[in-house]
Every structure is written in C-alpha cells, then in structure tokens.
Image 1 (cartoon, rainbow, N blue to C red):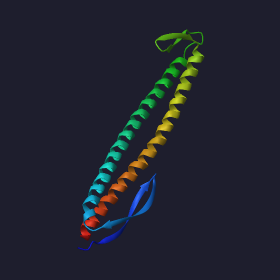
Image 2 (tube, rainbow, N blue to C red):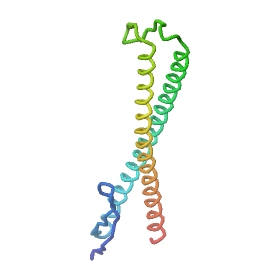
Image 3 (cartoon, rainbow, N blue to C red):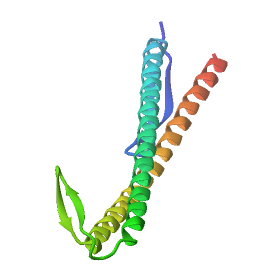
Image 4 (cartoon, rainbow, N blue to C red):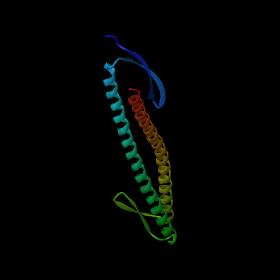
Length: 155
C-alpha cells in the first residue's frame, strides 16, 4: 500500500512573532494526531483568552479602587485646607496616630495621590497590552476555525 506524502505550511507563533513551519504529513495515519493537536491548541487558546479576560477585569477593578482613593485623598485635602494651621491633626501610621502639622498631612495626601496616579498609568499600559493579547488570541481562534472549515470543505 502506497503512502501519500504531503508538505504542509503551518503558521506558528514563537515569542510573539509569526513564523512559517513546514510539516511533513504522511497519509491518513497522521490525520487523527493532527486533529488532537489542533484541539489542544484550540483549548490552550481558549484558556489564554479566559485568563486574559480575567486579568483585564482585575485591572479595571484596581483602577477603579485607585481612582476612588485619589478622590478620597482630594476630598480630605480640601477639608484639611480649610483648617487653621495651628490645628492639631493626627495622621494614622499603622495602628497608631501621630501628631502632625496640617501642611505635612496635606503633603502626604498629595504624594499618595501622585503614587496612585502612577499606578493607574502602569495598570492602563498593562491593560492595553492585555487587550492586544486578547485580540491576537481571538484572531488565532478565528484562523483555526477557518482552517478547519477549509479542510472540511476540501475533503
């Protein structure tokens, strides 16, 4: 019985770069194993998409929390700014409160707000990366489905 040998060109992503890989396909024996590999790749892509979606939601939650903290710090600063500079103010440090000048409390609040703003920028950059990754995964799944349809139509 003669075996048919085909040379197939496959698009593979390595470290974020697409490369083309030649695959030697020998008859129908490898058809079943190719199907298993395709199913595994499909499942892995779905899992990656779920993880990426989860990370995106977590980033949104963190950004919302940081925005609320910034707003809280700004409101606190606004209220403290109306106080007399000689007013005794206490700032919490862990489980205790330390007597602090009004000016120093305001400086600490502003520094905290700046740090939170920097964290928001970092999270938004990470979020844009995750969105691109999600879009790439979606495109890869569409490609796989299209290839499967094309292969089914060809048989």
